[in-house]
Length: 559
Image (tube, rainbow, N blue to C red; front, side, top):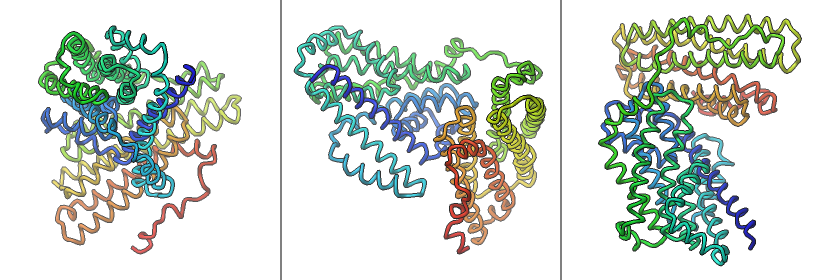
C-alpha cells in the first residue's frame, strides 16, 4: 500500500468523523431547541450544579467547544457571569471526555442497526422530533464507521520501514508530540475527533502509548484554544470565558505533560490496555482539572478583566451616527446594497436587543427598563426611514434587474423589522405592564410554554441574520421549518391553555388574555424574521405555490 493511498484513506475517514460529530451536534441542537439556555443561566445554581449542567450539555452536543461558545454568548448578552461561565466550560470539558470514553468502546456491531433505524426515521418521518433523532442515530453510526475506517487504513502502515523512526521520535520528543496534538485538534476543529483518532492509531499499533499520551494532552490544549479563536469577534467580556479556560487548561496540560513523561506516575493506567490507557489519562486529566479548577473560577474574574478590559461605551449620539448608508456610492449599486444590508442588520440587532429582556419584564417589571426599550424602538424607526429614503434614491438610478430585486427584498425585510420593533414596544411591553399592574400570575405550565417559545424566537432571530448575510439555502430551509414548528407550538400551547381553563385553574383564568396575546405576538415576531428566507427559497424553487395542506392537521379539523 502506497503512502499516498494511506493518507488519502486516513483523510477520508477523518472527514467522515468530523462530519458525523457535526451531524450529531446539529441533530441534538434542533431536537432540544433553545430551552437549555434557562438551565445554564439560572443564577440560583451553585458552581457544582453549573458545572454539572455544562457536563450534561457537552455530552448532549458532543462538543465542549460548542458549550464554551454558548457560555461566551450568554456572557455577552449579560445573562451569565465569568465565574459561572468558567464552571460551565470546566464541566463541559469533562463531559467531552465522557463522550470519548463511550465512543471508544467496541460498538461496531451497532453500525448496521443505527444506519437502518436512523436512516428510516430521518428519511421517512415528517415530524421534526423523530427526524432529528434519526439524524443523531445516523451521526453516531458514521462516527463508529469512521473509526473503523481509520483502523483499516492504518493496518498496512504498521509494516512500513519508516514507522519505527517516526514513532520513536514522537515517543522521545514529547514536546513535539504535544504541539502536534494541539495543532491537529485545532485544525480538525474538534478535540473529540482528534483524540478518537489518536486512540484508534494506538490500538492499531501505529503509535506507541507514550506518544499517544502526549498527543492527547496536546489535543486538550488545542481544544481549549479553539473557542478562543472562534470567539475573537465577540466583545471583551464574552472572550474572558474561553481565555480563562485556556489559561487553566493550558497550564494544567503542560504540567501533566512533564509529569507523564518524566515520572512513572501514570504507569497506573497501563493495566487498562493501550487504547483505554489514553482514554483514562484524558478522563483523569479533565476530572482533576474540574475538581482543582472549580474553586478558582471566581478568583480568575479580576485577572481576566485586566487582560480583556471592556472599553468605555460610546455615547448615544455617536451610536446614532454609525450608519452604513453612504450617498457617495449611490452610482455603484453593489456597494450601495452592501451598505443597505449592513444597515438592515444593525436595525435587526437593535430589535434583537429589545426582544431579549421581554420575559424578564413579564416576571419582574421594571418601568425604567421598559422606557429604555421603547426609546430603542424610536431608533429602529429612524433607521427604517433612512433605509427607505436611501433605497428610493438608489432606485432612481440605473439598477439592473438583480440589484433592483435585492433592493426591494431588503426594503421589505426592513419593513418587517420595523413592525417587529412595534410589536415588542407597543404589544409585549404593554402586556408586561398590564400583568404587573393587575398583579397577575401565569400557571407554571403556561409560563414554561411562553419561556420556551420566547427562547425559540431568540434563536431564530440569530438564524435569520445568518440567512440575511450568507444567503445559505439550507439555513433558509431551516428557518422556514422553524416557522412551521412555531405554528405548532403556538397551537399546542393555546389548546393546553384552554384545557386549563376548562379544568378551572384560577391562575390561567386570570391571565388568559395576556397569555393568548403573548402567544400571538411571539408567533408573529417569528414569522416576520423568517420572511428573510422566502426570496432565497423562491429563487431556488424550494417553495410550493400553496402550503395549505401542510398547515392544517387532522386534529385541527376535529376541534
